[in-house]
Structure formats: structure tokens, C-alpha cells
Image (cartoon, rainbow, N blue to C red; front, side, top):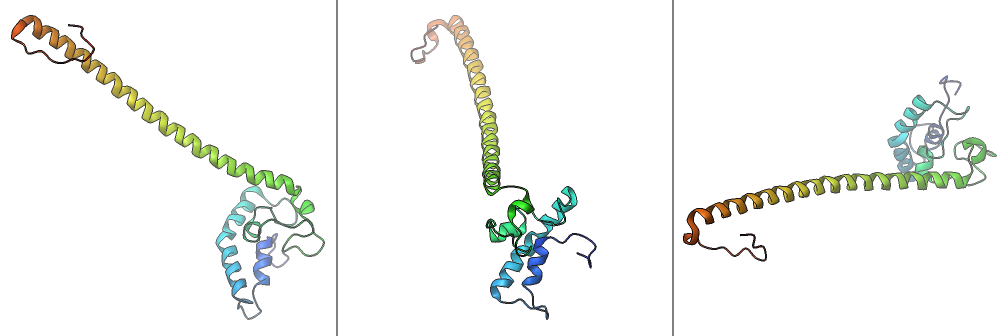
Length: 167
């Protein structure tokens, strides 16, 4: 933090623990974890830029480390040392963060359902327009048939009109 003149996020701390002094990874698992962290690090940096840092520590329950390693245990927060617990860092209790994750997945489901409803409404409007056009065409054909029956009388061949006999 002092060298960079800015708060250090716990993802940066975790990345530094996965590297040896010579720049190589401690092992293959460390390399894999570091790659996952690096892929998502820009999201954390954007969040800090837009929301700021809530305390001296740049840590959120759903930051990169939370996504890669999963939920924190009650007695520690990864990357912040011994004795630091989630309630002191995140200012929330575990069950609230569980509701938050359920809420975000529910929100996605609601958005998907709203899109589907919108699509179905558009289709229904199209079907209603088609039905109206068919009804108008049918009315025009009835008028034409009546005209032709008056004009040509018995010379006009008869058509099977089903149960509808308005002639």
C-alpha cells in the first residue's frame, strides 16, 4: 500500500503469495488460481474506481477472491491476515450475503421472464393482427359472393361454406 500510494485489494495480496521471488508460481494449482484471479481483477479495479473503497481494505464478499475461493469462513478473510473476520471487513453477516446472492440470481430469473413475456406479447399482437386481417378478407369475400349471386343467379356454382350460410 505504501509503495503504490493506494489501497491494495486482497486479490493483489493473494497474487503476490502465489509467486516466488524469481517470478515463477509456487505450483501448478497456484498458477491456475492466479490465472482465474487475473481474469477477473479488472472488475474489482472498476468497482473501486466507481464505488470507492469502503475502508482501508479493498475487500468485498463478491470480489475476485470470493468468486475464486468461495464464501469466507466465519473466523477469517483470505488475504487480510489472522484475526480478521468477515463481519468486521464486509460489515455484513453471512446470512445477509447468502440472501444477496439468492437475490441476484432471482433478479436474473425475473429479467429472463420479463423478456419472455415481452416476446410472447409481441407474438400475440401479431396473431391478433393476422386474425383481424382474415376476418376482413372473409367479410369482403361474403360481399363479393352476394354480389355475384345477384348478378349471375343460378349460373354461379355453389360453394360449401360449412355451417355459415348467410346467403
